[in-house]
Image 1 (cartoon, helix red, strand yellow):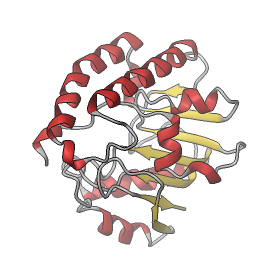
Image 2 (cartoon, helix red, strand yellow):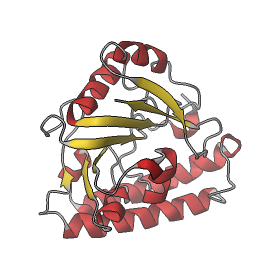
Image 3 (cartoon, helix red, strand yellow):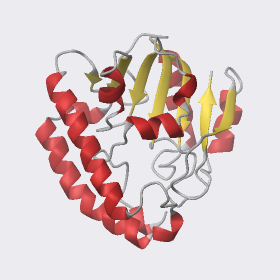
Image 4 (tube, one colour):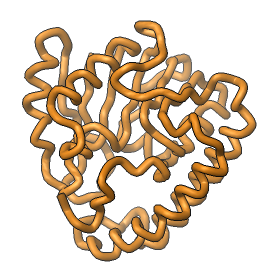
Length: 227
């Protein structure tokens, strides 16, 4: 694992915007009527932004069991480390969209603010559910589309092959289609679990690697699509 971003596991305080989701999940083909689950997105603003337009979106993550104050405090402690890591690994990224490491941190802070407003105002609506893979608190086929961002395959050192397969089967249990991004691990190399996972999934599901219109880490231009 690359030392710049070795935090010993997933980073729960680092969220992405709806525009980023739309790009790295290639969401232009998703109808407005689709029931969508964001699994493991932490303080991403996707649910707030898409839900604010009247779409049906639910987010599930262990961090939703914490208060907004705790999530915000975790961001403050994480952001300095992420900024340092982005500066040190500058050459591993394409900066034509984000501009600079400092701009990325500002964007993440804006994303957090949007998430927190919705998280606090919608806490009783059921939009944010505390839960974790591979046992999600939803009935089978509750959702038309399940998205899993910056968790599986990225953290290949933390999650073994069996865990990846178990998590993906659970995502397919609750949703009719699953999209996972990214497929490179923390070192920026193709996950060692990807090919083996696809082989195991193809016993009972269609699995394909699909190019997406997004590249921040160099070479990170594909998602996994399961149906």
